[in-house]
Length: 356
Ligand code: SF4
Picture (tube, rainbow, N blue to C red):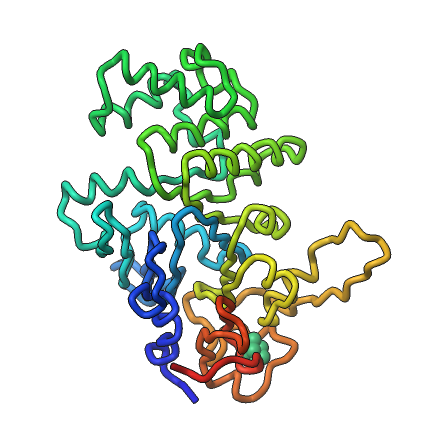
């Protein structure tokens, strides 16, 4: 029986540590990452609590894979993505990245110059292509800025890079002289993807990249992202609430609830044999194309509790239809599911291997 948060995450730590898991294809190893936001009150703006948006998350990402992050709004997936690209400074934890010499180092401990260099290796594509591009700058100007910042060629070379990038997302090079309002939503998102690629990143955090787009063009953008991934050997962290989209894109998927990972597995295993009641509930709401196959929908009771004061024990216990007494007091560790290599779940009722 485990009752403290620290000890309960020893399994996550084990599975996320390349040294212990023997996986040298890991490009990013996130350890015990936390992002808390202070809550202020009163005239003196006294800190009265913290929003625990990301609370002790440990995950690794393999080079060339797509790791999907799913969960309801407010579960912390976007905060986790933004913390990985350092748009938010983490409250605690480590972000270990594999450097060109093969070694892994915590990028939160780098000096200013190293930090600047590493930032170009991890880029982000945002959900809303309408607000991601500066409306008063041409596409050329928007692309040229990061290229110049990272000393990538002279003017002619930079122009050639921008031409190639636009072609790689199936847009004409001469479009570089146009303004964002001259493009459709799908074209703008392709431009945003090209801009994220301009400084040769290894990892791209894709934060709901198609959810603001018309359904008819979502597949186009997703297929383009897959092609670019193969061609450029990119690693994606793919954040979405649409489970069908995540299944289509991801090799492995992490399910988040109230700032924590509650299940992590290969995409096929997660969809076919979900182990966590929350994952089961999310999947039961996905419509199936086979009309003869009826699914029993699991309706979650109540709302997601406040991340300022999350429930004790299992954080999901207030909404879980399988909740038992121990769930209210004992924190379930993220443990390996029995008989699997790569399937982890945090639930007392799941058949897992003993704590390591
Ligand atoms: Fe439900 Fe208990 Fe499992 Fe939490 S630990 S998901 S409350 S059964």
